Length: 229
Image (spheres, rainbow, N blue to C red):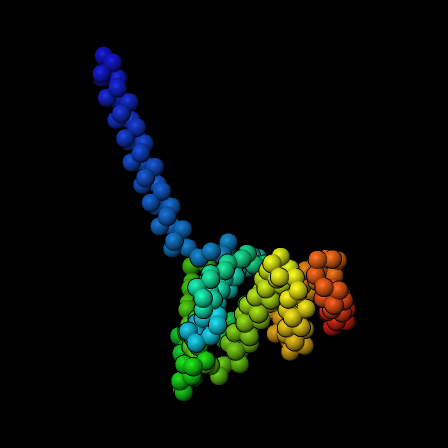
């Protein structure tokens, strides 16, 4: 009797294990086949150039602006951070892709002349069940170039944030140099959303572990960003 009960229990356990394994496999397939966006549209940008100190950069986010930023250094370091962009920036990108009907046409955006030395850009747009990817090293399409510029500015911004946070923790004396780089990027309009840096700059301004010159510089950059608004 006990042996029979034990056999029945073993059969039930086996059945549950098979069911769970099947469910897990199906969940894995579904998750791998779906983009990371939470609905609506998702935007993905990848830049690759083996000659650069940062040979790979990835930016991705959903319609709510939530996503991730990843870059790989020449020395093999792989950095990944969460990312949040504003609804206004998402709307700008959506308008640009709508303008060129990115999801509706099969246009080859690669310029007739090859500029491989510039690196390869890959952009993917996902909207509902529709998905399209385009790769090129140079394009003459103005709207697509503007979209690339936005992605590039997001990457520049997030890289600078990472560098500033890193030197504050590990090498505070290098903070002034990072702030000079940031000022140059702000003046050349290579930062996607300058106001998103104000919180970090306020922290640096109040951080007595960094040189006074850096705290004063952070205050000037805050004023600079506020005036630009």
